[in-house]
Image 1 (cartoon, helix red, strand yellow):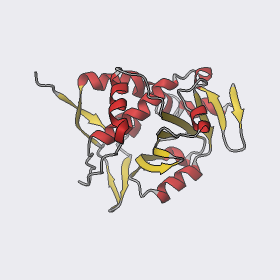
Image 2: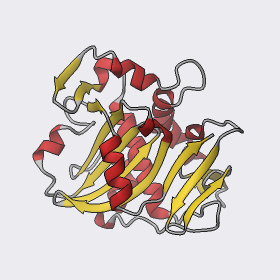
Image 3: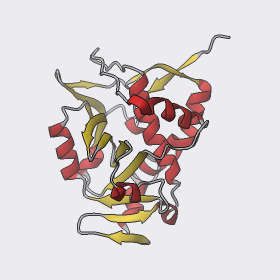
Length: 244
C-alpha cells in the first residue's frame, strides 16, 4: 500500500505567528534573504504528523506561541518566580510539573526537530539546501523513541532554557551540531526557548541532573543574549528571525 506523505514543516508552522506583515529572514553562508515562505517539504505520513503534534508540538506551541491572549505564556509564567527550585547568579531552575508543564513533551518536541534535520535535506526559500544532521549511532534509537517503540535512551540528554530577554524571543536558530563536553551537541532556538540536545556515553553528570526528563523535570529561566551571541558567532548557523 502506498503511503501518502503530508506537507511537513522543519520549523512548526505555529512558530511563524502567521502574520502577513511579518517576513522570515534566513541567514546562511550565502547571506541574509527575506522570504515569506515557510520551510517545508513532503516528509511524514499523517499518522506521524499527528504523533509529533500530540506528543510534543501542541504543548510546546501553547507555551511559546499562543494564538490568543498572552504573547509568550511560558515567559510570563516563569517571570513571576513562584515555585522555583534553585536560583543561581545567572539562571533560575523550575520543575516543569510545578508550573503546569509536561517536560516529556518538550523533550519529544526537541528530538523530533533534530530527527527531521537528520533524515531530510531541507530546501530553503532561496533554493539553498542545508546539510542533514549526522546523529551517528543515535539515529535509530531516536527513531524508535519517536515512534513509541522504546523509551528515551539514557545517553541522550535534553536541556531547556526559557529566555527572559525580549531580543532572544525574535529569533529562530536551526539545529546546529558541535562536539562539546565530551559528546555531540545539537542546539536550536525556538522563539524564546533554547534547546540543547546532548548525545554520548560520557555526558557530564551535571548536565544529566539538569535534563528536562530527569527526576526533577527541570527547565531553566534567564537572559539568553550571551548564548544566542555565542551560537550565531561560533557555528555559522542557518538562522531564522521575524522582522516587521
